[in-house]
Image (tube, rainbow, N blue to C red; front, top):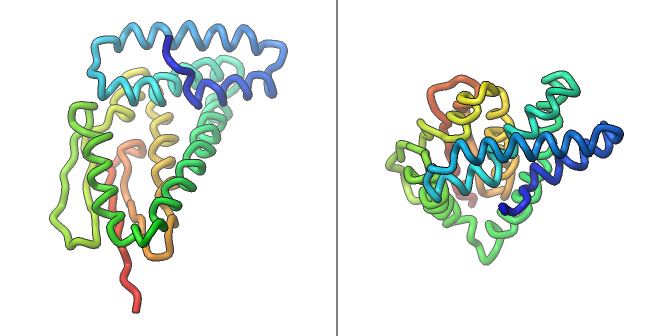
Length: 202
């Protein structure tokens, strides 16, 4: 049995607070839908399954389930809030790491290495990395399973929750680090253009 994701936990809280009389049925419906999604994606790579299990499939299952008892806009807002709260926790950890022993100077390149490892081609991602100076990491994500899977299951709007989570986690993590992005696949652009730079100050 897979470990319960933060999205599933957040969904349970929403059900108990927003729909107490229906909560047990909604949780059961969500678990049934999640089981179907897992079965349909069981042949995906181990690397992709990390993303499927931790966010993508729970996101789809909970969004579909909530959409049955509230309008899609409300359901999307609930999922967005759950993902955002998780990203804020990540932001604290990232900010702490960036501040540790002057790590901010090397953080752009560390970010790039982590991205290549966790969001690699074996996980269903594809990207273009740009040659930059040592203080900047820049890449365009041109293929993303978060986008692919949400489109496949008829909820492309859900992808925006995950796109926004990057901005929440990496924006303003340190005065000397600048996070910049102008495009996202989730909003219909041709790529997600990521840039993280160390800003030298006198």
